[in-house]
Image 1: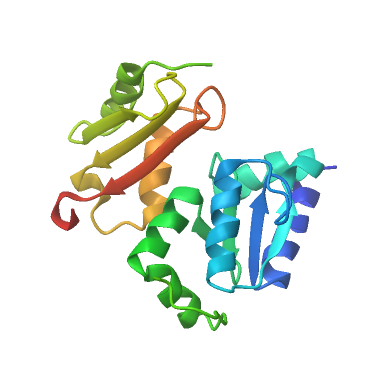
Image 2: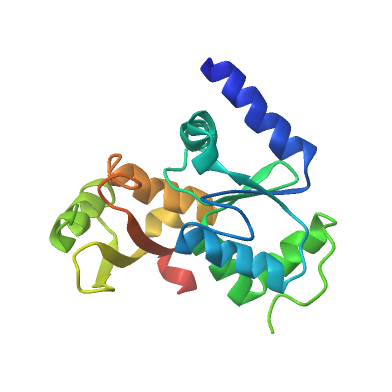
Length: 115
Length: 79
């Protein structure tokens, strides 16, 4: 598969779904602690999201790093915009900023960002 | 592959000479680090852009030989 095809597939995922998490493993069985952390944050906030398992697709696994100029997985996208990896998502959750950003973007949550 | 914390600090300071870098060995195994980087160069930049600058400084090691570097960045004013 060419790089352009991979970019197109990634672009389709992040624009076709409101909240997309590129992760190692699946939301039910994360294969990496950093991915698990982001799944946990989203779950605590009641955010519906699509998980894309990069371990199941090596093209996506390498392609997503080039797409966002970001060297690590997980990567969280909201309405097509790259929000960050595990550290940033956790920091934004703890400061309450994640809830604000999701609200601004019209993503429903069931709980406030900070417990 | 373990990486020396001094090496991580050196790479970051090479790219961001005025940065204050604090590195903590989380697991004591030379493989899981947390870094706090404070630099005036981060002012006005998004967190994503700030982290990208640090990752850039690490010249491709992040995600490769450096698996776990929990990163926190800020400009001096907002710490």
